[in-house]
Length: 75
Image (cartoon, rainbow, N blue to C red; front, side, top):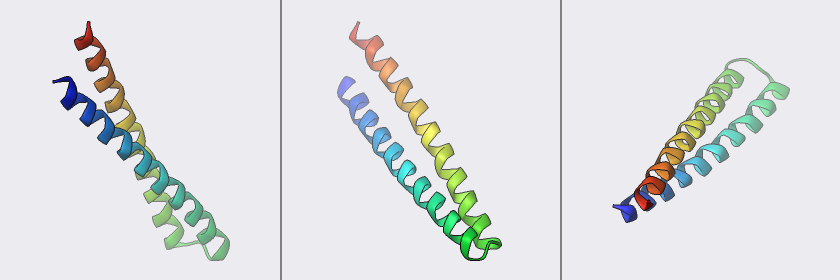
């Protein structure tokens, strides 16, 4: 059971990093779009940025829950 939880934890950690990188890229692109023209493209990139940052928070919370379960099983 612990091995499974560790694998789940590693997957969640990778998803956190992926969401963080995608959010930062969307952030940089939204500022580039803002400088160039604004409008619809900027709004799309801001929505992607918000979605990725929310996903990052969600995956971090799930990772914390998995760590808590691993600790409780270790006792």
